[in-house]
Each structure stands twice: as structure tokens, then as C-alpha cells.
Length: 436
Ligand code: XUL
Ligand code: CO
Image 1 (tube, rainbow, N blue to C red):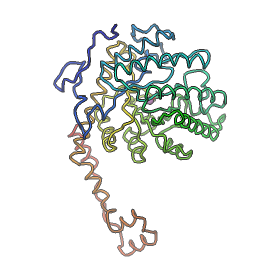
Image 2: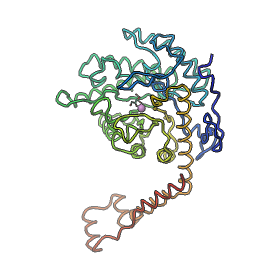
Image 3: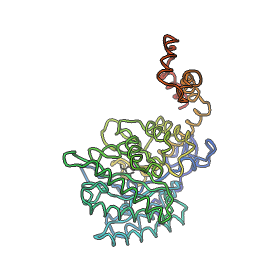
Image 4: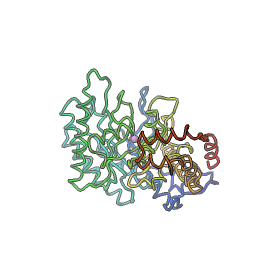
């Protein structure tokens, strides 16, 4: 039984190919800075948008054509989706996938029943992983869709909801562990507030930290050694999410002693909603040894919400890959397409076009970034820009031997500072365009 009979395995055919169902740039075996593109990029398909998204928006219900899906929350339907997902991923040639508990497994009236169904689905996922070699990049729990989470989960004012969320995350970590997941993600679905008049921010943040500590303690107690990831997002669904951006997340993690166990899963559309570029968020995390994984997508800059489009912008992917290569890769994280096809792209084949485009865009970005790095054009420029700190007074500042007294004396002797040199931004932008 095939769910995508019109598609066979997607192959690399090179830039000259006109086949829309072929890679033009993603050759999984091509080596970039010592790693194959497959190892470097660690592409992952997300279960929620790709196998559960039906194109609903605030103005209308889903309208996607998914002939295999009867729309029910039956176990049979959930099991069938596993077959669909693995056929899709295998034909696409990705090595990883990601899910929330409720994407793969429907919720039932009680926690016990929900967990039992989840076990049945997890068995099938494990079988499918073993049959195909596709692995779990990360698991997570949906702590935002059910009405109980209206005030948040770990930051809910209702302690029972905190307990329910804890039980859900406990189970999701156990399933992630059973499936050999490389990471576990926290995205604070509704961990934030709509109005401070009814919110005790201090208590909510304390609770969130307690929750993450308990999650980590449980994970380690069952032998899950995967990496934890925190996913920054400034707003939506709440007016203010506590995981606003990398800076806010890092501050939170450090305040509560979690910085050694939790890294960042950075998403482009979340970065731009926070008023940052993706490169800023990635670089800010990288320099603090906290760049863990990426949710690859692209937001429409004319719209103020999370549009989760597939990334096709080579400028963006080049910037991302400059940071990834500087770090030497992103493993055990990966590059998860947290992206959805447009509502109008309602046919199953559109799922292939979307992922092929995203994978090609990142493969190009990787190769362009590697050439820029190989020629050392940015490195050399940046190094020279700070050369005044390599010796003399600058060196005393960096080494920590300078004081306000010594700096004052230096300037009294010298009279005035040395002239500045140009930042050459336009020159550098032109240079980067030559590589693209
Ligand atoms: C929501 C979002 C999530 C996380 C996982 O904007 O990005 O899907 O990636 O919970
Ligand atoms: Co995401």
C-alpha cells in the first residue's frame, strides 16, 4: 500500500535538472568542511504540520486533501498516519523526525487511557524506525491545545494543571527515550501571560524552573542522556511568552541553574517576531555554547504572526550555515522543518515540493557559507577590525590588567584616541552577494 504512489525516492540530480521532484543542490554524500551534507544538516520532518496540519486558519477549517486520513482520533487512524509519515520521510530521504505526544497519539478521557494509546503508537513508531533507519531527533509534549492549559502548563495558576503537565512530560520523555530520541524540547506553548494585573510573574517563573528541573531529574533517572532544548518565542499564543528570545531564555536558565543541561532550539520565525534576525539568535546562543538545534522556517515579514513558511531564501540559509559551520555542526541537534505548506497548497505532492525546496536551500546555504569561510573574507576583516586589542593598551584591557587609572594616564599621555577606520558594511554585503 502506497500513500504517495506518484512519487518515488527523491534523488539528487544536480543544478541543471528541471525535475521538480529532484534535489538540485542537496547531495547527501557531498562533503562540506569534513562532513557529508547528510551529517551536517541532519534534516528532520515535523509531524505536527506535515502529518496533522490540515490548513485551518482563523477564517476557515482545514481543507487539505489527505486521502489516507479519516479525520477521526481513532487509534487506527493514528497508526495509519505512522505508515504515511515513514513512507513520506523515506521517499524524501531525511534521517530524522520530531513530534509532540498529541501529534502521534490522540488524547483520551483519562491520563491512564491516553498513556496506553501512546504506548501502542510508540511501538509502531519504533517498528517503523527500525524498518527504515529513520531516527527521532526530538520529542516533546503538547501543553497548549487542551482547554486545561488555558492559563499555561508549568506556569498555570492551577496546581492540578501543573501536575497534569508534569505527568504528560514524564510520559513524553519516556517515549522519547524508548525511541532513542537525541533531544527533548520544551516550547512554552502558553507559558506567558496576557495581562500582568492577574499574574504573579515571580511565582510562574519559579514554577517553570521547578518543572524543568523535575523533567531533567526524571530523564536522567531513567537513563535518557539526550540534550534538552528550550525554544524561544516572544509571543503567540500569549501576549508575552517567558521564553521570549535567546537572551531571555539564557537569563532564565542561568538564574535557575539549568544552563548546563538545556540548550536552545532556535526558530527563524520566532527570532523575527522577537525583532531579531535568525543569525543574531543563533550567534548569540553559539557564543555561549548554547546553540543546540534549529527549527527551520521563514516568516512573512509583512505579517505579524508565525507563518511558518518553508525556508527558500538563500541569504537566510547562508547566514544560518555560517553560524553552524563556525560551531562545527549542530549535532546532536538538527535542522527540523517546523514549517507548513500554505492553505492553498492542499495536495499531498505539495509536501514534497516544500521539503525539497527547504533542503535545497539549506544545502546551497551550506556550500556558500563554506566557500566564504574557506576564503576567509569575513574572518580576516573582523580580525583586523579588532586588531587594536591584540597588543598595547587593548591587550591590557582584554587581559584585565587595565584600570580606569591606567586608561586615563594612557589617554592623558596620548592626547586623543587613534582615528577610526571604516566598517565597510556595503563592501562586505557586496562581497557576500558575489558568493551567492
Ligand atoms: C510553535 C512551535 C512549536 C515547537 C514545538 O510555534 O514552534 O511547534 O517547535 O513545540
Ligand atoms: Co518550533
